[in-house]
Length: 59
Image 1 (cartoon, rainbow, N blue to C red):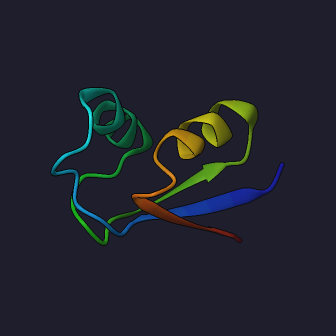
Image 2: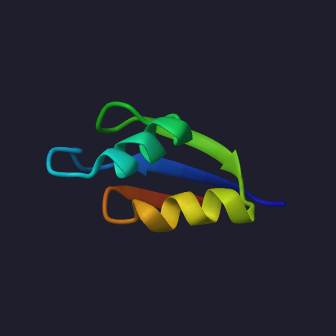
């Protein structure tokens, strides 16, 4: 499996509680924070839910 780097680029003001919980589960708290995960179906689904708040790149 490949690794994926996720960066939080937008605020969670106006986001739903579910989206905020998803970001916390990914390990993203402040704007500019970065988390690295292995690319699997669970992580892809989480990214899909908050794609408008994060930037992703393969590493």
